[in-house]
Each structure stands twice: as C-alpha cells, then as structure tokens.
Image (cartoon, rainbow, N blue to C red; front, side):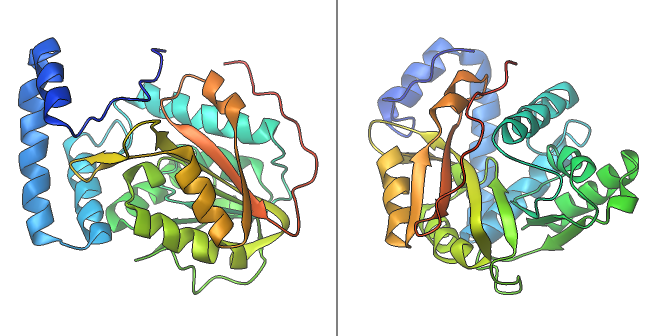
Length: 271
C-alpha cells in the first residue's frame, strides 16, 4: 500500500490542480461527484441529512460492491481486516457490541457470526443501507444470531442503556464527519460504554492543516481527536499497529479514564 501523505491539503487549489494534471482520467468523475455533492448540500444543509443522501446515491450507483467499497472483493477484504484486528485486540464472543455506522454489514456480518446471539447492535443514519444490511443477514444465514439494526438521526444514543456495551466500534465514520458530529459522539458514548469497555474508531489523519474534501472526507490531526476525548472525561490512545495494515485510515481507542481497559493482545494480525 502507498505511504500515507500526511501533509497534503487536498482542499487547496494547488493540490487539486496538481492532482488533475497527474490524473487527467479522474477529472470527469471528480467533477461529477462535486456537482452531485453541491446539489445535495443545497437540498440538505444539515450534515447528517446530506451524508444520508450521499450514501443513497453511492449505493444506488454500485449496489453490488457495497456502499463503502469499490468492489465486492474489497468489501470482503476490509471487513475481514476489521474483524481480525478486533479479534487480536480483545474481542470475545461474550462481548456486547455497538457498531456505529454499521452500513451494509461489511464487517458486521463477521461480528454477528462470532458474537453470542443478541450481542450485536448496529446503528446507521441511512434507511437504504440498513435494508441492505438485512439482506446481508439473510445471505449469510445469521437470523438466529438476533442482530439488532436501528436507524438513527444523531450520535447521542439517547435510547440505549447505560453502561451496556463492552465494545463500541466505528469504522470509516469520523472520516466523513465534521468536528461537531465527532464531539457529539464522544460526549455521549461514555454513558453507554461499560466499565472496562473500549471504543475503537478510524479517521483520516493529517499532520498538516485540517481540511475536508467536498464535505465528504475530513482530515484531522491525531491530537485534535485525543483532546476531544479527554474533554469528555475519556482516555484515548493512538493505535499505531493499525498503521501496519493495508488501510488508508488511522485508529484511536477510547476507554473510561477511571476504568482503564484490561491488558489485551497488542500484536496486529498479519494480512
């Protein structure tokens, strides 16, 4: 996998012009995406509603690939990567898991299959993607595992019980979220996280200026997100072994400050 570019500002005019000159074949697709996103932002000023519309458009354009993947093969590979990493870092069948942005269960079907019945709870902002998730449950024969799939409009978790989930997981959610959405999640996730539990999330990392591309892809410095977690009374650490895996995003683990996570395996799986 190519080395991450941690200093580029992809929103700057110079970067966009340089990228277009290096990859002229990608310009028509970028312009089509920019036009689509501008229209969707006009119709949906609220970011959650806007990104819900983006997900619908993306899933409609390539329904066989999976909403978050270029191909079904990539869908399977990224799901397996998430599952293998969590298995190597403490996930056990008895864990009660909340997956934020569960999507069409790219990794979720593996979690459902592995966890004890009734121990998987997936939430997403997109009704279209949750219908696809139901199809994934059927396709993989997971009805007896009693997964719960719920539509949400925010990340306040107001309807979920206190201190219930031992594992909370959000893959490729904060990479598409402005800072107020991330702050809202971190302000409320501690209430639903069980003592000794942990919350893993990925994000697009930069060591330069924080920026976004078309309000779809957001790039943050690690210290910004660590500081947000600490502001809400949580302990957070950068998971540097995730960086060795063939994935473009980075990962942070959050726990209760007063209840640090128990010692767990640290070695990332060989992929």
